Amino acid sequence: MTHFLRNEGDINLTEERKQWYQNLDDKAMVQVVVDSKLFIHQSLSTPCIDVLSECEGSYIITSKGEKILDFHGNNLHQVGYKNPAVINAVKEALDTLPFCPRRYTNGYAIELATKLTSLVPGLSRVLFAPGGSEANSMALKLARLVTGKHKVVSMWGSFHGGGLDTISVGGEAIFRKNAGPLMSGVEHVPQPDSYRPLWPNDPDQDIYISYIRHVFEHEGDVGALIAETIRNTDVQIPTLNFWKKLRALCDEFGVVLILDEIPIAFGRTGKFFAFQHFDIVPDIVTIGKALGGGVFPMAAVITSERFNCVAENSVGHFTHEKSPLGSAAGVAVLKYIEDKKLIQKSVETGNYLHTRLIEMQQRYEKIGDIRGCGLLWGLDLVTDRSTKNRACEEAEKIMYYCIKNGLSFKVSQGNVLCLAPPLTISSSELEHALTVLEAAFQTFLS
Ligand SMILES: Cc1ncc(COP(=O)(O)O)c(C=O)c1O
Image 1 (tube, helix red, strand yellow):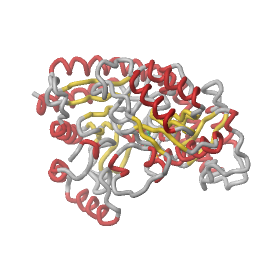
Image 2 (image 1 turned 60 degrees about the vertical axis):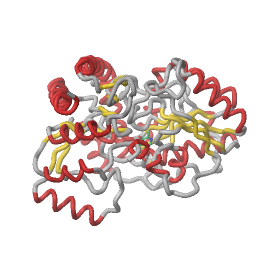
Image 3 (image 1 turned 90 degrees about the vertical axis):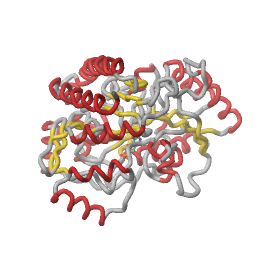
Image 4 (image 1 turned 135 degrees about the vertical axis):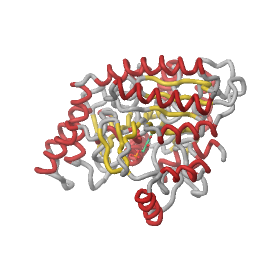
């Protein structure tokens, strides 16, 4: 199967997955089968791999009681699972104001909005949504309303959510294939790739910029460009030059720059927002996942005063728009990150993890590239460093071996191990994860 169908993550249709089920006990197997008879099958989810009964801190815990360090966590577990600060805040909201119907506001939502709009000078307006996909939909809508231009430029290989509009701007085949006509006016451009660049001898990624300029000029009427600041699952980090020039290009053409930081904000990359690495500010940033503390689905757009000009429209009309529960969770997450200095910890732990991964790369030829920052790392496994051919078989075997031995992570593009632990991970947990990884590499990469 082409790696394009595995851009986002590992799929459940492989031979390795079939063999995996031998690891389950009868009780778990029965539940997996019942689940599989009830839910619509989809390649990144059902049929599922196992049954969970608990999650806490850095761990998910199966119904059999196996504790698995979770370096996947759908990228929402920046403050760890069942974080007491978050749970207590949500419990308090549950006991007082579990829901806030439209037309009313509440103290929880106001407090969260106050905190979110104090993070970056100039980004002073918010809208909440129940999920990241919806936040991106709102951002795209806002850009149309503000600019009067409906065309969007986005990147092949990116993910922006599972809705029809967000798969239209998304660039992953697994969401788009057979889906029929998608949103019109979307033009995709290549995602900057530092390891397998489309153009050789372009270390600053200037040709990617020239390509986008060409599209802006020839397409005309482009209202927005949406991108993941750092591509999450296979961990692609564009150059400083790329982002600086793209920001300037958007300004030149009156294009709204929407940065999707749904999985990577809240310190994942070693800064609160990934765009802070590049010294730029987007016109709209979308966040989600960690915002709800791993408890409540919660997302948001944060933008500037200039975008508060659509009062006669309805941009996001969500039942759970100003959710007191989601807002209470968000406030607790922000406070926890600040109190525990988690962004600094993300940098320090990330530097240590990087050093250890580099040492492994020196021992295993098939670790072709290591990319990342903070606590987001991608290990690009190759059959041969000169061809850079993707070592998909090995990657899958390594993933199942690690899960069996207590470490879960995602595999992107079929061959990139994506390591994203909670920012709260302890040093002993990290050591354990590295021991499991090393054993897997010894078994499958030697
Ligand atoms: C970059 C990115 N954008 C958008 C989304 C969609 O978020 P949600 O699943 O909350 O709709 C995701 C989810 O994985 C994501 O990784």
